[in-house]
Amino acid sequence: MFRFAHTYYFYLLALIPVFTVLLVLFLVWKKKAMNRYGDWLVIRQLMPEYAPGKTMLKFILIMAAIASLVFALADPQTGSRLEKVQRKGIDLIIALDISNSMLAQDIKPNRLERAKQAISRLIDNLKGDRIGIIVFAGKAYTQLPITTDYAAAKMFTSTINTTIVPTQGTAIAEAIDMATTSFGESKRNKAIVIITDGEDHQGNVLEQTEIATQKGIVIYTIGMGLPEGVPIPIYNGDIQIGYKKDQNGQTIMTKLDETLLQRIASIGNGMYVRATNSETGLTKIFDDINKIQKSEIEEKQFSDYEDRFQYFVALALILLILDLFVFERKTRWMKKIKPF
Image 1 (cartoon, helix red, strand yellow):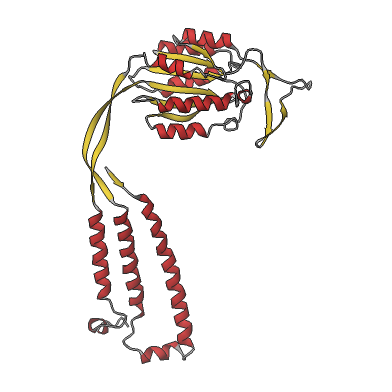
Image 2 (tube, rainbow, N blue to C red):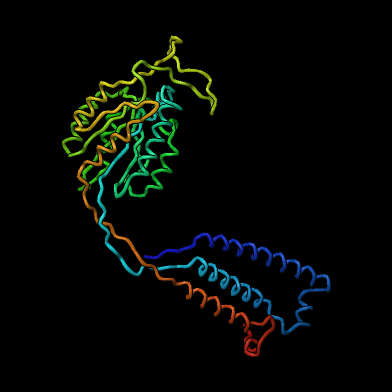
């Protein structure tokens, strides 16, 4: 295993093109200065010891030395010992509804933002579990493949909004199918948590739930919103400009479909929880998920790394020493070279 411990030092490599531009400008200025004294070919005859190619050679040696020192500062390392680590946990996929109805404000600040906050807190409590995120509206998409990188999971969660899925709707069945496929051939116990207002627009969600359950997947559901229904806000940037209306000019109300979500959880051997302004329900579900037997998974990691910067320091020293022996005038052996 190879890595650089301090990759930010690579920004120093930007000095090389800067120095190259400066050299070109210097050579142009030098040539113009020489031309003021007379014809360049005549001037060359007056300076038989001058070797213009050596200026470029010295520059290349110095730039190569700088590059070697930058690589040394970045501290190249090689993994010296591979360890096998046993981790206990389950595979968990969050399927989050990001249709426009999730912007409803019956749960503050709105259904989607509250769900994202809850997911972020859930990630903070994971230990050894793998997590993936699927977002869905009219279609389902993988936001984050299943992983143990919790920092990446929180980052991807923070970027979720209603605009990243172009088709509106609530494709719960497609989200369950995608989550089922995303687990792959994993031998760990698996769970899906669906966070939605439950207004499914596909119709085959219960059949898809049964397919997932037959594969040993436990499905939980969280209902976001109130059964009474609230209007769906419309935004222009960050400014709310009104509420969504139908073709007759009537305000569209989005209602929580608890019955469907309860049936999904029942078929999926899981639990249904309705979110409120004080509790999203994800904590209750996570407590229940923790009761699922956690499987061991073997992971490989490099526990020790050895520094290899000394090789690049040595190369830089060799290049600088070579530069000391390169003179801008011709040496005896170069005088003997006559290509023409």
